[in-house]
Image 1 (cartoon, one colour):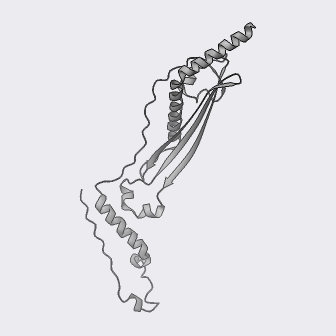
Image 2: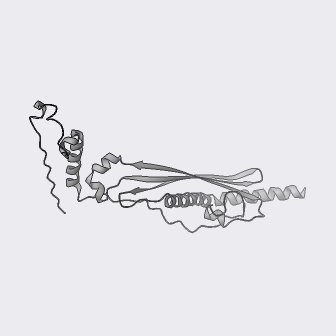
Image 3: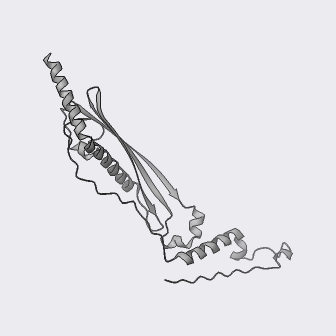
Length: 217
């Protein structure tokens, strides 16, 4: 696709020699009302757009991988802190209200934004053809503690940032980004639990033996 843009600028060489009254801007005269630096920005923006119109920038979203099927932990535990509807899947399917093992789960979300300055985006013709104007991001930080009585047998942390750019035609919602961030950080906690499952199983078995030996004395 070819576009030809012609920029025509007229300068009055006698402008400085006119009287103050004669130098007043003509009504509706855009050339004299606009500062020269604005005309320069417009000229540069149009030139850049003419050179790069074939490679327009599209809105790009960070794609999150599909979460793997959660596997239950090698033991049951009760939720001492957290919302049962908002915990890692492997913990959710390993809950038991009567278990001596306790899960404590916390999640924190923070938001950040980046925007192209309004003046620059308004003067850039690419803005009206889908150019990226900025991005919205959400960072999720999660901690999971597993304890048996007063003894902590597992502690895990994870941090994930998800983001999505936006343009003049489309913009992400904070809710959708929050959901992505929560799912991603819980998946990271689940991955850590899967890697540590053998050690956790041994730790829980050791606690049960210790409790049995103490009861038998």
